[in-house]
Length: 59
Image (cartoon, rainbow, N blue to C red; front, side, top):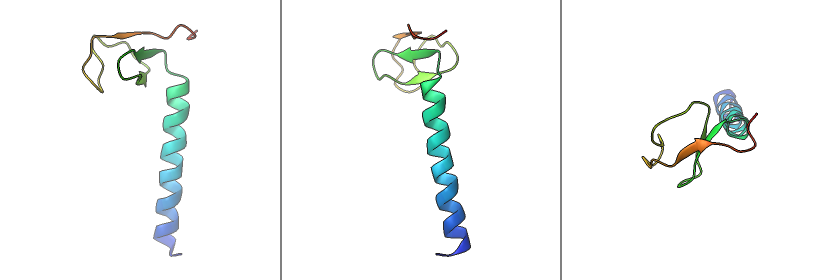
């Protein structure tokens, strides 16, 4: 495998891991599409629904 292919694979793996950890630690979520995020929004940035609320297990 070439150097750039290997680096690209590692970067993609890091991005996926970072996204998963961020979602697990998010304080807010959308009841409609179940997206998770760190800051409160009036509507979901993913689907546009007005069903954003604090996660009950968020501290």
